[in-house]
Amino acid sequence: MAATGNNGIAPVVMAFDEVCFGEGGEQALHNISFDVRRGETLIIHGAAASGKTLILKLALGLLKPTRGRIFLFDRDVTRLAEREWFDMRSRVGVLFQEGGLFDSLSIEENVAYPLLNQRLLHFPEEQVHDRVEQSLEFVELGHTLEKFPSELSGGMRRRVGIARAIVTQPELLLYDSPTAGLDPITANTIMALIVKGRDVRGATTVMVTHRHQDGEILARYRFDERTSTLVPALEDSTHTRYLVLREGSVAFLGSSAEFDASKDPYVTMFASR
Ligand SMILES: Nc1ncnc2c1ncn2[C@@H]1O[C@H](COP(=O)(O)OP(=O)(O)OP(=O)(O)O)[C@@H](O)[C@H]1O
Ligand SMILES: [Mg+2]
Image 1 (tube, rainbow, N blue to C red):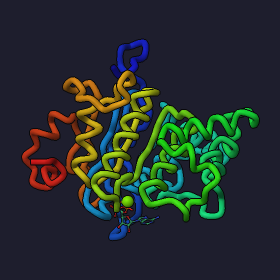
Image 2 (cartoon, rainbow, N blue to C red):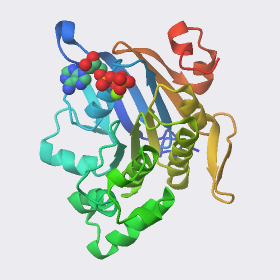
Image 3 (tube, protein in one colour):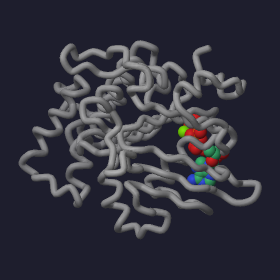
Image 4 (cartoon, rainbow, N blue to C red):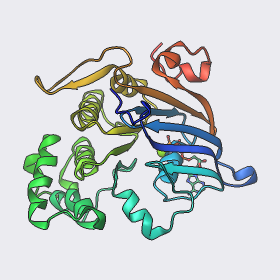
C-alpha cells in the first residue's frame, strides 16, 4: 500500500508543473506535468533524446527549468539556493545513466561517498564500513570492497551503482537506464535488485528505461523477503504509473492498466504487445 497522509492521500514526493527546458527551437522539454506520491513507482519511457535524463537532472537541481515549477518532498525547489540543494539531494538515491563510479576510488570508497559527503545525514564515521558492506551484500558484491571499478564487469559496476544509490536508505530512488548495454540475464538481475530496493524499504522509485521488460518487472513483481525472490504482485499493488515522453512532450501519463490499454502506436512501442 502507498503510505497515506492524514487526508488519505499519499504525500507528493516529486512533482513537475508545466516544466519547460530550453528556449525556442532548442526547447528540449515542453510543459511537462506529473507527480509521484510516496510509495509509488514511476516508469519513464521514451525514445533516445526524448528528454528522460533531463527530467531526472531537473528533479535533482543539476539543471534549472526555463519555465514551470518543480517540487520535491512537497517543497517548491524551482529556485532553491545551491547550498540547500545539498540537503535535498541527500534524501535521494541516484543511479546515473553512465554509472558514475569514480575510477580512482575503491568500491568501498565509491559506496561510502554519499554517507561521507552529505552533511545533513550526520552519519557516524565508525559505522560507515558496516553500512557500506551491508549495502554491497544487498547487491551480492560483499567481496569486492577492496577492488577498483576497472576490475569489475559492466553488470557488477551497475550493481555497485545500486549499492551506492541505496546506501543512505533514501526515501526516493532514481534510476536512469539501469539495464542499458547489459545481456538479458544480467539485466534481469539488476531489475530484481531494483524491485528488492523498492520493496524492502518501501522507497518511492522512479526509473527511466526504454526496455518494456524493465517496466513490466517493476509493475508486476514484488520482492518476497521470506524466499528472497521476486513473486507476482497482485494487480495494482505495486502502485506503478507510466510517463511516456515523445520529443520532449508527455505522450502518455497514467496507471499501468491504462498503459496496457493504450492504443497510441508510439506508446505501445514501449509495451510488450
Ligand atoms: N544540459 C543540456 N542543455 C541543453 N540541452 C540538453 C542538455 N542535456 C540534454 N539536452 C538535450 O535534450 C534532449 C533530451 O536529452 P536527454 O538526455 O534527456 O535524452 P534521453 O531521453 O535521456 O535519451 P537517451 O535514451 O539517449 O539517454 C536531447 O536533444 C539533448 O541534446
Ligand atoms: Mg538518457
